[in-house]
Image (tube, rainbow, N blue to C red; front, side, top):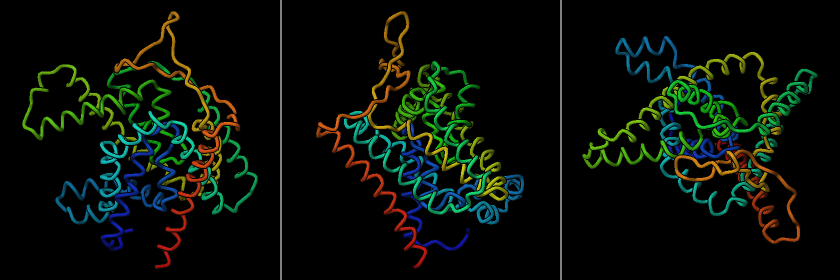
Length: 337
């Protein structure tokens, strides 16, 4: 895990982090799938597991090099710097594409998840009864989550901290979309759109030496929300990685079976052909803090095969599958080198 990395290795790790961060922001898509298909999932889990009492002891004793090696810090820094950078770059592009080419974007994601199921299933050969039950349980859980209705927005800082813990699970659990969970909790727009935009504005102000935002109550409210969400995310990453590292060591095949089932069951979340159902109150549309309509759920439908748009969307599904197969091909050849 701590083997020397070439510049190219570091560059590709950053790109993988970029992809993982962008995936985490898209409802229905899991950054954990990117980690799984990208071949760095287990290293991610075991690296995060090293953020423990021993690591803090090394840090507090001033043994920084030992801390750096023990925690596999280079790997963590590259992955998470890519993920953070994506929130201010790639994810902004994704927001634009979803707004203007929603059907084709969801089609691509749908194809990528199908490819991910194939990729993971190809490595799974243990079809004992307990693993079949695990797959079934995963499918039922994924379907159940995809059918849930979202709650209302809640900016209580303790709840925001909890959202951070839950939302970050998309990084560590392939198939579980942290952003979709945030939609169900009612805080997707607040935490991954409004707060990120406010943080971006604040960073731009700081770079320009403008600290007037300290007197802005609205801006400070969002910064408190970002801080609480970030703290919850960091806490959640460490805790879930400890649990996952434990279960992966002891029940690797069963966990893989549940992941396969869960990803399959959650395909309905990213089904490309759907119409938004908006929240109503007393017959009126409810609006979020940006004045946009709040989505309650989606109505899924079978596409009209006589329309050209449908066939273009189907083509994008195959593009998505192809992307995963190319990543798999790259991973195999990289190991041979």
